[in-house]
Length: 180
Image (cartoon, rainbow, N blue to C red; front, side, top):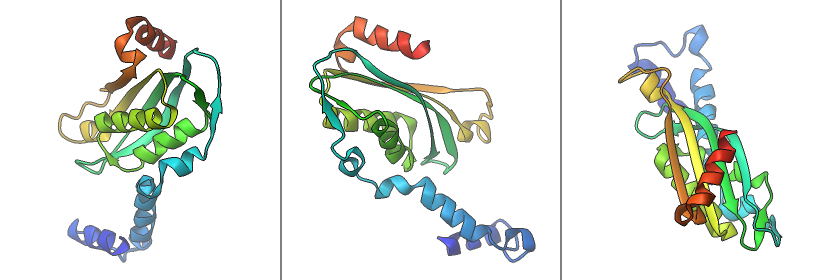
């Protein structure tokens, strides 16, 4: 990948050997390895059996989870917050596992809509909850730096399943709680 960044600098009309750029191909390659590290992660390894039996039906919400990802169309970042809520069936998951699962999908080339679906599907497959909801609020540099160039726009997407889809009161409770 380092060689590709060297070629990119040359294609841009830069001299990759000038003092300010000498280490750039190596640094850029390392950065992109980190930005796309989710491809090397596995759901079961992340969860690591951190499911705990409960006999509660109260909603569990983890909100304002920061994330960053790369738009697969322009390779530019998008970033924001993800809110996750679920109604347990038999188990809850260790709270730290939710941001780790988010990072696994965010650290891949993505579109926001698919990322929300993938997070929702992964949590549903592990938890088998009565219902689950994901809301993503993000700013996209591909909209801010090019194209329409709107710096204050925000994309909001959601994915809901189970009670969050079939029961309006459950969905509304989730929406109300993430907005507080």
